[in-house]
Length: 355
Image (cartoon, rainbow, N blue to C red; front, side):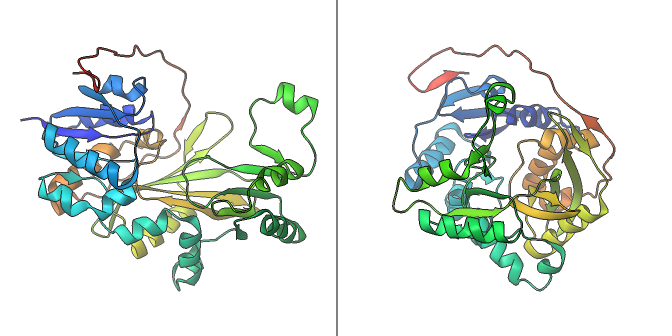
């Protein structure tokens, strides 16, 4: 009998994970449910049944999730949206017989969701602080403290950037440049994360207080995503993925970054699939964030010969019996091209898109 698996509001690249989970080697069969607030979310076209989510958050969203699981007899829930809050309500999903692919340690989830809490914990931990480098940073909530932080970092010789303390991906990330944008940059260099110091001040002084912002040194070296698969303290796979120029990615056998992943696993013991992001400066990898979920670019890392999305589901279903230590293939460089996908828009009622 097919297992019913549900992906709520996710990155578009979850379409790759859906295909990999379906094409597993063990003969597990799945009926895939997908939801999104947008009826045109691309990954919905890869699902067997798709529904439009209400645009709600918090406890109201948890009630929606529970009702969706109950109504559609969901066996496996793979959340991205509100995954921290979902971890706090796991027992309610378990009561419905739903297995949830999320770290069950809600306190750890909450800490890792907040960059300041993560950095502070690592800086004060006797093991982690020896192996994981933290960038110089300040937390600000108003224009005056932003100016102070900016000048303090500049006095140390740093180029300065900022990003919301709670957020994901590149949302809100800006690199501060001392000069205004030039005609050449405007016309010929495309979309940029750069912002002038003057413009940053103008924006941040629009309110007397704003949500916590991390103002930090900018690391100008290569960025790596370290995709990990683990369970019950066993690190089953570690794949450092180098983000080269443009769309090029390389799977690199970096002993330094693999050791970072080992220390994170040793202390946090995050189960299933998760991701550590670092960026180099002057030969030193400095932590950006730890994401206790599948990363948006995980499908690149799966070129190492490991079906990580499926293996994570298998761990959720079988527990310790599914533990297996993998040997990734490194040295693989890849990129991608755009591909057209026909969107399914068959309306049966106000919520159901197709089935």
